[in-house]
Length: 137
Image (cartoon, rainbow, N blue to C red; front, side):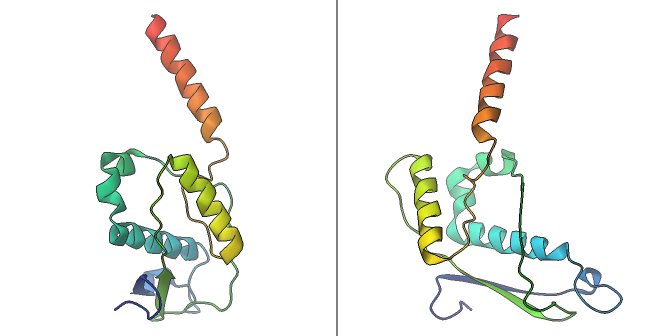
């Protein structure tokens, strides 16, 4: 069931393996919960179908993250992730990234776009140089 007022929502429960001796969720699990929510959203939005093999062949790296703990999750809690405003962009993926950053800034929502990789351009340059070197031989 979708949360009223939102296009997407998903729920999951805290499992026994995710808690410590005081029945509180291990800190590292909070980022896993965010990953589960993003993966569920991608399935819901059809991103995997749209990207095809590029999605499973692409590596994502998190350089920095911050979490505001409002209260600890405990064994048996139900976690609900919700949101999703989909906007079709006519243009390049870079245009979509700029729009996502602007939208997050004005709305206060968290930007989960994949275009926030600080070393993306440098990595592409390195890859191009390595390919050119391999083609010379």
